[in-house]
Structure formats: structure tokens, C-alpha cells
Image 1: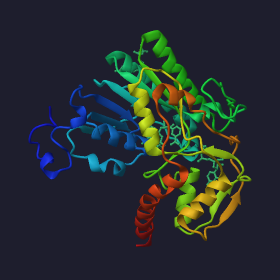
Image 2: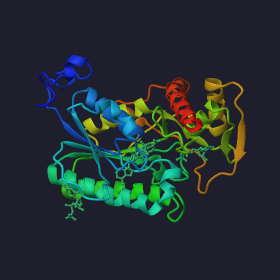
Image 3: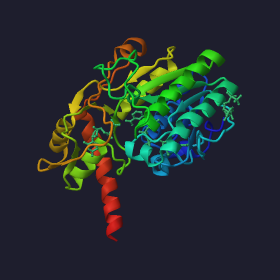
Length: 343
Ligand code: NAD
Ligand code: UDP
Ligand code: UDP
């Protein structure tokens, strides 16, 4: 047991020698693929703080070591630079499979790579789960519903996805990943869990990631106009990252395969979002209209009754409460970056 006893870390106060949360149950060894990314790094923090061992697998396509640097030196933490498209041998109890670019700008950058990551990467992680008897959680997406004809979306809805469009590498990739997970569940008795995540925001999002919340927040801080695509009347439902992480852990620890919608049902048009960002960051912020991207879903809002009932989970943080929590992180990083460029 490398983390108990006098490792020297306990005396610095950063890593307690014994972690109360782990007392009374076996310490788990958990893989988080994509753990250097936005959601993954917050999940890793939660798993480490409750006393488990975490191995992150990441190829740093969109993830950053900065997101995990505070864990370097912790004996319960390990970071492996690896691409999930290639097989890997590990001995673990649980696999949280997040590796996949999530922002449209990133996943369209190399669409074939996005499909390989979703299909071959998920296949490899399921093969690993089968070999070692680990429980496997897939982070799927609300994008499996495409441009939905049912509103709000329930898990029973099969979706309205264009199979040959610019977003298909991601949407269809995730749909195939869900299929693979269900086939390993039915055919090989792998314990799988499927989360369908709706738009999530918070600290550590990439500044240049092109998603709407990170764009508007960075633009308002830099005193640039917020770029509204299309007429701005399309809707999304925005979830704060700590609510998502709680939901992922509840799903992994629970007894239900899913799929489960994990999202905040609060629904906003992009114009309303711009208004909230303006109130939060800078009352003089302006907007600028830009052409929309292809196949942009017109509306999206989760029905979360299933997760409420079976996982006893629901989000706690509203958009107005959550936005200020990411502003400091963005301000600091923008200041560093802008200063860096100015030198
Ligand atoms: P992110 O881009 O910040 O993180 C993805 C991580 O995966 C990065 O660290 C990246 O380097 C890594 N990665 C990508 N391809 C890889 C590969 N082939 N091998 C190894 N690592 C690889 O995105 P995020 O927002 O943290 O999303 C995490 C997961 O949640 C993704 O699977 C995404 O599809 C899903 N999701 C996120 C949202 C959201 O709003 N954030 C919504 C729906 C679904
Ligand atoms: N795999 C892996 N790590 C493991 C076990 C399997 O990366 O510990 C990969 C393996 O290389 C294969 C995939 O997972 O590409 C599916 O494995 P499985 O055993 O289910 O299928 P098979 O190898 O029989 O095609
Ligand atoms: N969008 C926008 N301005 C931006 C970025 C995105 O108006 O600077 C819109 C985009 O057209 C979409 C919505 O915001 O309707 C959400 O886009 P995002 O890329 O954040 O996530 P998606 O839900 O499309 O995956």
C-alpha cells in the first residue's frame, strides 16, 4: 500500500496518509481515459479525493497536463500517454471511458480519427473490461438524439441523426460506441454503464475549444463581441461540471446499465445565454451574428426523470450560479496567455 504510512506527502498536508472515505471498502483501481481533459480531470479529482487509485490514459489531443499537475507526485495517481485506438494491458476494477474530443471544432478537425477513437478506442476498452472483469462506463452524448423530433428528449427516443454529415463522425461514432457497450454487456457479461451527457461547462474547458459557453465567456473577458451563430434562437441546456461528475459516479456505483441522460433541464436560447454572460461578466458586452454550422440541432433539453428515480441524482447548480465559478479560471488563463503573447 504505497499511499499509507510515512511517504512524506502526509506531512505536507496535501495527501492524507489514510483516507477516511476508503475505510470500510476496498480501494479501487480506476482507469479514466481522457482524464487530462475538461470533464475527465474533474472526475479524477473526485476519485482521488475519495481515496481510490487512478490511472489516466490520454493522448493529449485536447487534454492538458496542466489539468492534472496538482496530482503529480501523488502515489495513488498515474498518467500514461497513450492513444486508446491502440490496445493496452492493465489490471483495473473500473473504467471510465471519456477519451474523445467533445467540441465540434475538435471532432471535425480529423473526423476519421474521431471515428477510430469512438469505435476502436471503445472496443479496446471493452476488451480490457472483459479480460479483467472491470465495470465499464461510456460517456455518450445528447448528440445521439441528433436534431430531435421529440422534446424534451427521453432515453427511449432513438434520435434523428444525419449519417453522412459533418457531425456524423461524432454522433454516429458515439451511437456505435453505445452499440458496442450493449453487445459486450449482452454477449460477454461485461458490466456496462451508459451516460448520455448534455452540454457541460466549467473551469478547465479549453479557451479555444469553440463551444458556446467557453466562446462567450472568453469573448466577454477579452472585450470582444460574443459570436451568436444563426439567429441565436436555437436552445441548449447547460450543466455545471460538478453536477455531471456526481452523476457519472452515481451511475458507475449504481446497479443500472442505462442509458441515462445526465444534464440540467434548464433550457436557454443562445441569445439568452449571451444575456446571462453579459450580466455575469460585463454589462457592456455586445453580440455579433455569424452564419451557423451545418446540421446544428435546433433544440435540446434532457428529460432526467430516469436518473432522478434510479440514481437519485439531479443537478444542483443553475446557469446563473455556475457561470461565475468558471470566470476566475478563464480570467487567469486569458491573462497568462495574452501576457505571454505580448512579450
Ligand atoms: P475534452 O476534449 O476536454 O476531453 C477529451 C479528452 O480525451 C482529452 O484529454 C483528449 O486529449 C483525450 N483524447 C481524445 N482522443 C483520444 C485518444 N484517441 N486516445 C486517448 N485520449 C484521447 O472533452 P470533455 O468535454 O472533457 O469530454 C469528455 C467526454 O465527455 C467525451 O467523451 C465527450 O464526448 C463526452 N461529452 C462531453 C460533453 C460536454 O459538454 N463536455 C457533452 C457530451 C459528451
Ligand atoms: N484489448 C485491450 N486490452 C485488453 C484486452 C483486449 O486493449 O486487456 C483489445 C484487443 O486488442 C482487441 C479489443 O480489445 O482489439 C477487443 O478485445 P476482445 O478480446 O473482446 O476481442 P478479440 O481480441 O477477440 O477481437
Ligand atoms: N454557438 C454560438 N456561438 C459560438 C459557438 C456556438 O452561437 O461561438 C452555438 C452553436 O451554433 C450551437 C450552440 O451554440 O447552436 C451550442 O454549440 P456548442 O458547439 O457549444 O455545442 P453543441 O451542442 O453544438 O455540441
